Length: 504
Image (cartoon, rainbow, N blue to C red; front, side, top):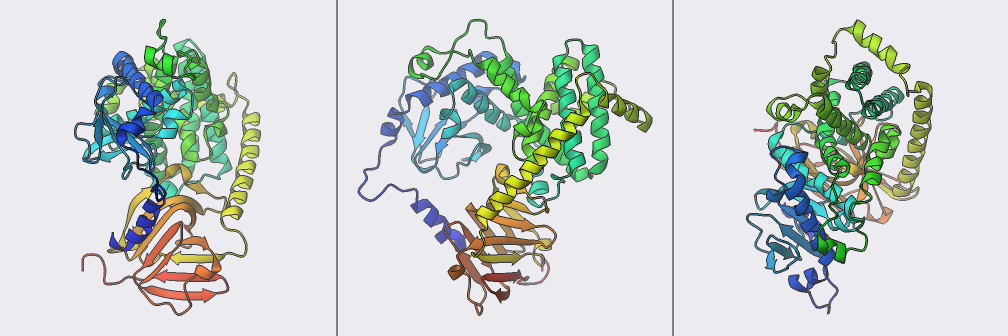
């Protein structure tokens, strides 16, 4: 996209070494990363020993892995056709070819994306190196499974547009309270040993879910189910690793020798408990609704292991989601009378304190509201300039989402959505293009506008002509055609179509 090259070039230049600094070769860079390499080989060893036990058909050793430290280092293994800028380096620490580059273009966050035409699990350097080895290995398994899930169940994921455009009731008290009750019932089902008792808790869980989802539309329900699969199953892989008896196995000698933070898997049980804790306090799962679906999906998968041992084959073969498989496993009734009866039992279930759950949810929602208000005040301080972009005339003509960080999408109590990283364009042929990198923009679904903050002196002049481009260190806005309304420290751009309807 030619009009964005100056913005992207500036971002790239900020990552270059200072003038006069000698650029290190890939071999020199990787020479200081012995712990990283030892952890990668341990990851491969876990795959060799246990991968097919985690999920039949999943071969971790055939999953390309790219570890990246933006602007500094990229390490690639298990890739059949590395991009040309990757150089193979020799190391005794990894039993497969290792490719290294100082070019991290195309490597983003923790995700699974095509690299040179092959879906590759991308893991940040911080993810692999900033925590003790056992925790890092569990998270890496999580990220690697995303690539496999995309292959065997490509349609089963949560539509991020539901969150991006503020179409989920994140600040509904009833929805939050019932969601926490669902989590508590799943926790109780995991705790009991007898399948009969686990089934009883699951019937109540499904009844609460059926009642709660009367608040939601099909798009919102599909989003929940998709995220329970997309992220919940990856967290389930973490569970399978951390809960597995290793029978005296304490890791590869190289990792034991090189990594002072490696305990030989003795802390696995503690890390497992950390993954389970959010079931009794759902807010502990994360700040966003999306993160709170992770443990719910994980718990359902663990319980399916107990109640429907061959469920993974059915999951891959059919369009059914986790809660649908669970409903079949426990013969959940579909009639309203039975659902209401099980729902009432859930409120008096052993180990469930409904009043306490509601009290915790009220406190958590109040704290979440205050935290997001404080964040908003910091990102949009009084006295700075405001640029509002109205996309209502071009949004119906289509859009292309090129990049977004789902974890950074935060809904506000008033329904607006805060995005910290967003690359999107609207209309035909980029009639309006918006790029936000390490900045902030507020989407208002009621008004179909994006709000950005910038120094008042950088606001476009009242008589600016179109095409109009506004660029700062953190964002770039390009509008082909529109009108400009000026006020004190404020500009409103109303985007307009350049031509007729799409296809004319």
